[in-house]
Image (tube, rainbow, N blue to C red; front, side, top):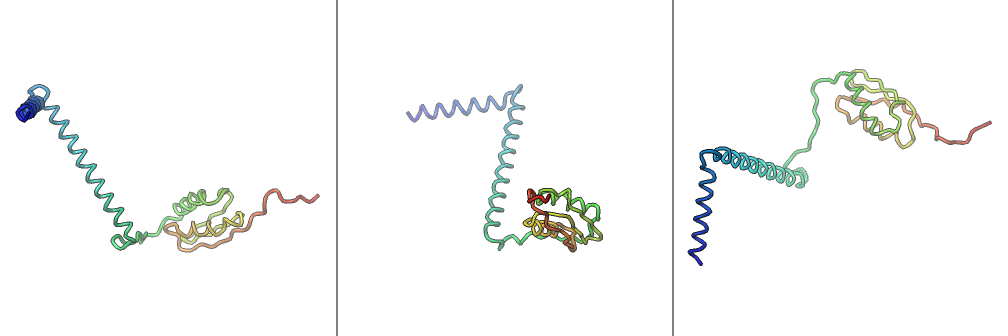
Length: 150
């Protein structure tokens, strides 16, 4: 039985050599093997890097410091206004009714919002990079469907 296995292995090795060293199609086959090997190597590198990042993040910040945003240059007021408007669209139901004024990073925000939305709006605006201060001029919106007076 041992000689049968050796014969099968020798036959398979010979077939593989002929397959890859074929003068007509062997060059393309070898290129495909190299390409697939490179893809596999790349995927393995990504997986090990992702695993090490996850372990570092799980360690409670002892390995990786907190991510902080540091801006040394001032942000253009028009760009900052657009960023604020974009963020407000995720926080408030009717963000188009809010007034936003920006001057040198100081933000004045006004309009009527629901009572529970005032604090989230102010916090969301304050978190945006480039905002130096927030002047809250928001008012509580009257509940819809209240009793009408005749």
